[in-house]
Length: 182
Image 1 (tube, rainbow, N blue to C red):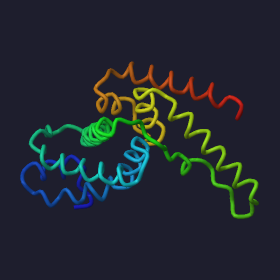
Image 2: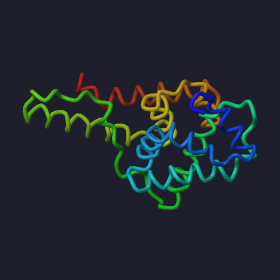
Image 3: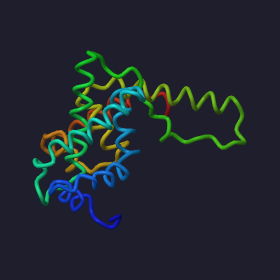
Image 4: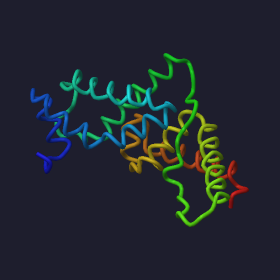
């Protein structure tokens, strides 16, 4: 079963083989957890969003269009779950963990290097948090999830040109906020 595409697995789930959802959960666990965490800002909420995403996938399996690409649909469901969670709590994320993608000093570096690394991670986190929701969503999907613009377009239900424009604006603002780091 590991050689089946996401779409083939989802079509089997749609046809009633609901136990097959475990393969998709396994394939997307780390990526979707990280994505939900970056949106919601805490691990417990991210775990809840991850679980709720797959519960919704199961409940709405009939709405999956055979032949459609699975990944954008999955991210769209997850994003909507995260948006609902933020709305219910009436807050923006408290923290956004970005440091895993920053270079990690090798073990030979001293405390100053580790401290500098922590300060850099905090500056980047604050800069990303300062983006508007629509710009932050595009940035997180493109930069951290490494999704192509056409998939981001499907997830956010906006034209590809809008995705490009939002990414340009987000990158420009982040560049301005972090200019002194160059």
